[in-house]
Image (cartoon, rainbow, N blue to C red; front, side):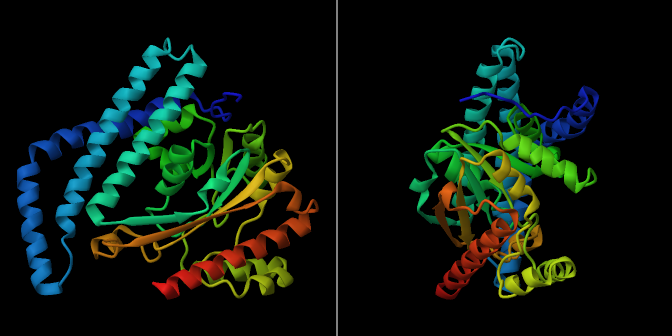
Length: 343
């Protein structure tokens, strides 16, 4: 496997300023929350009792206080670990050692966070077909429905199946300190929304090149979390450019129409990669923190399905690839609808 880091260079000054803004609040927050934890827990219990009596809501305040402490502790220990890995690799001079150890750290970090969510909220994840993820290279296309489903690929694909995913993520996520440090060491791309579509597609394509049998590429074709309003706006926008495609996608109900530019660039740069569709159902209606506060996450069952399409079954022509992706997405939408009905 070829070991590479984030191909996009960023001025060192920008990294330093961002980390000075985001890392101290995490560490200071851990100290404050730990010191105030007895009071916070008592307050949370009182809030939960009041909500249970007046609104019949599950105990959310206690769960959220516990998760806040776990998150702050995990991030603080994670940042210390990442700094130690940098020192042990000769201040980053042993690039292969630093990248491999950072990748292993990333999987542990995600497992702790997702494991905490599962434990605190009684979440169950049932998946099928994960054996199709290996060998690589694979292009993993995942549905985006919630603020929580970002943890699924790292937990189910990277950590469990040992696929070294390359991520395309929105740049705003660099405000998360551990993701900032680890994510910029590894081969990922953080999308700049104001760069221009052509440049973005080129950079996404570059990230996909050179993948080997242990590698995968993760892409969110929807681009953002689903809402019915966003679905309608997306169809209207497509209809202005391509009425035939908009009519083809009109039956879609639970997902947003897929954006094709990034995937087409990836298929061009990684023609030997198979495509794995990672579709999940159960996180619907969890778009905002307020949805979680309302108790909607408690006791959820999350269904995940993996299906693999060999690269020789993907049409070579651009227009045919768009039609192929649309049909793949429509079939996934039908599966989500079926699972939602069963639930």
